Length: 192
Image (tube, rainbow, N blue to C red; front, side):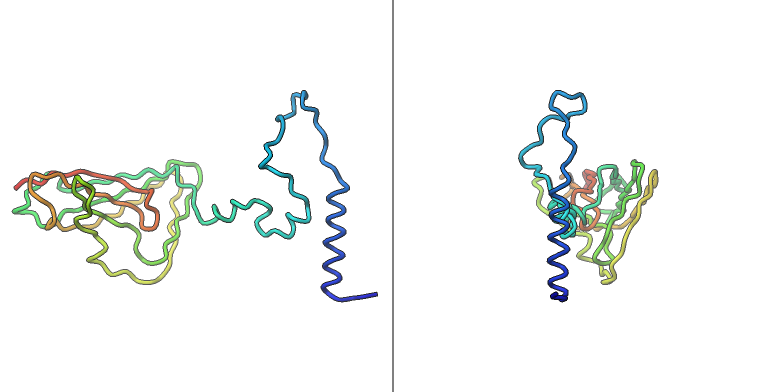
């Protein structure tokens, strides 16, 4: 008898495949109240062998979703302080970004470096006038942020007003770095 690891694996896979094929799923008639109706053609049944040998348990989209947190319960709020200011006397304004978890489960966010937020100043046409991170230096350490249910985390930073034009609206977009969908917008109109 051949006793190699390759042969043993082949026998094991064959036996598991036969076992999966020989144990049919319970049949529920289509007119039964427990029937969910016919299965869509795209949802093919997967046998036990494929599930065992496939590291993502037969769901090809599971790997794509693995690194994406469920962020629909996060609420973002941005504020600019002072809300009304004169460009001649104000060179910098404070921007606060509050991130609140309104869900029932903690949300984990992963960051490739020490930057946690980004702040953009745009004109009404959507052109970027300035980027807060251009004037900052970030360490290369990775990190996680855990936002517990009913918890709010606030980031406060200072941005320059040098690119703003008096009397013209400036749109300040603040968002979580690496998660551009997690953003909040505040509009300011600086006075001369």
